[in-house]
Image 1 (tube, helix red, strand yellow):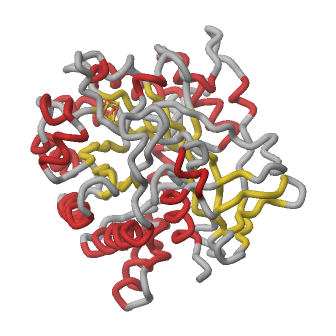
Image 2: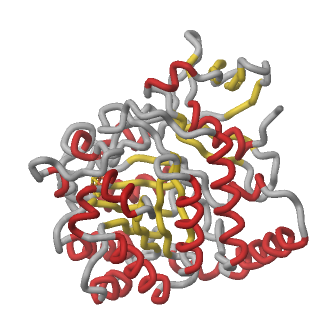
Image 3: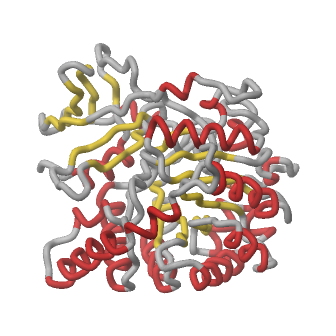
Length: 406
Ligand code: SF4
């Protein structure tokens, strides 16, 4: 059966894709292994046929072992267009490959290649601002078993990024790529996570004027969240990853030993009360623990007033779990339907901020394409669209830079 854009997105995450021997990728965004390594695929835009959300973005696994057995094959070129062929059915899907921006080959004023500072993951800019997450320094290492940050920071990306490096890269990405949102992360940094990040947030808000999201290990002193909110942060996300305590301890030994699940949940709840609805998210990985537990985590996060960001497990090359199988399409489809339904029932305003399409996950509003028409769905969709119009001036205000020089 022919898949719609969100179904194809899910199946590509689960099965990966092969590249035809004559496919033309010249000028496409290069496969980039930075941050946790989950963006190690090929960036692709899948047309939806809808005016409001014309494309679903997906970072398709192409280098992982399971991708070699994928029924999907990418063919074509930039003149005639690219298409994905499903070799099981013969179905052909026209797709778009975003071009690599010129700023990827520019350097910051101290000579650091901007592509080693930030990376486009869909329409957002992702920057890992800290030294390597401290979980990699323990012996034996306490890193999360799906993560490859310890292999990427200092290798595929600059080991240290100054505020000037980050500001200049944000400005280039805004000017050339139309970026409206930068996502800053940094793993576990002891008690220095948010404290380290606050000056970056303030400088980006002041000098570039794009939306800024932060993703760090949870802090025990919640006043630290107040400080970054005062500095102008627009979004905070919390990587709970797994709700089952045994799976959490097994896959995220550092988080289990140092933080515990309760702290993630309490910090998320605190921030969801402090920031506008829809500005906080809880991140989980689907495809490791039993799917019923994933559904439970989705309900928990949405019940706090945050939106669930669900990453489909990718056995990334070099990760401790690189030999694990990816999850099944049917289960992941069920998970994504639950994401949308939970957001709808809790009136979480998803897909409201301008031009934020994340390629590493199925965005909650992508999943609208999975849900059968109903009065409840229609009402929620109308509410989201009205809200989007209403908050446009607010985002216009938050997207202004605060200096005359930018
Ligand atoms: S906290 Fe876990 S996922 Fe995040 S950078 Fe550290 S090891 Fe990787």
